[in-house]
Structures are given as C-alpha cells and as structure tokens.
Image 1: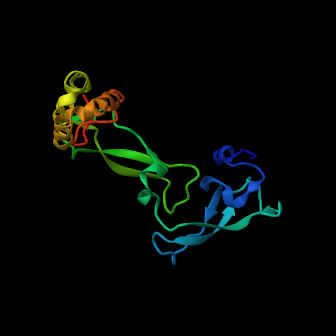
Image 2: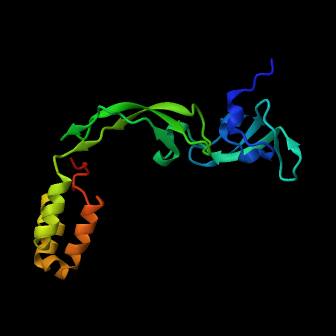
Image 3: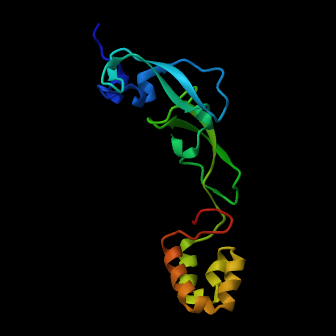
Length: 190
C-alpha cells in the first residue's frame, strides 16, 4: 500500500534535517542529559520524509541540540491548551479544570507532545469594567478608580497629587478603557 502518513503534511521537503518539526523525526532518548541543560540527541527521519544536511546532501541520521526537559515542564508559551467553557467562578481563584495541552510544532521536548494539565479557572472578584471606567472618568482625579479596584497605594498617590495634575487621570482613563489596568487581586472584570 502506498498510503501517505498524516505527518507528511507537516514535514517540509528538502529542508535541513535539524530544522524539521518533531513529528517528522524519531529521536533516541538521551538518559544522561541533565534537566534544564542543553543536550545532544541522535535522530532519524521518519519514512517518506526527505531532508538534507548543511552541504545539501540527503541525510537520514542526524543530531539535534535541545534543552533536556519533558513536554509538560515547558513554559506556558510553548504549548496550547483547551479552554474550559464552564469554569468561570466568582471569588474562588483556586478552582482548577482538566485541560489537554499540545506542544507547538517548532518546540522539541521529551515525552508525549499531548499531555493533560490542571489549569486555574478564570475567576472574578465582582469588579465591573464599566464601573471602573465611569469612576476613572468622573472621580479619577481623586483616585476613586484605583480605590475601587483595590489598588489603595495608587489611589492615595492620585488623591494627594490631584490625579498627577490631571496627567495620571487621563492615562488611567485610557489604561482602564482598554483593560490594561484591572483589579488588584488578579481577577477578571465581570
């Protein structure tokens, strides 16, 4: 049978072997690698994958350098997780949900590239964005917006500096308007 494997669509043809996505190769586990340190791994291209070395010669066996760590230990920017649609809570920041995470194509790591992970739910402390914005526009010079959001130090600073002579007040209207400044407890707006 000449059926083409599904991983072929992710594998560029005639590119450098060391730059192939992880789905296009199989690598031997380097048991002597030290966690967090750079290590060398012996790899081989999968069937039907064509790649070359630095001199443009066809290659099947090659080595890659990558950090010695399991996929589930990667930084959160290196993988994408499913979001929960029923996990919005009020005043409960420690509730978690089960997510399925997948490592991004260009990242190399040890172990399974799809793994389960417990993630924190989005939560809110009951602060409304519209109320924060209205306070910022009307009473922002007195720090009412910052007091409402639980940022009492900034609120005192605005109160005693008359809103930074109006400059801080204008900046806060913009920052709250775009959602950059939020509640001090790290929760989301309602």
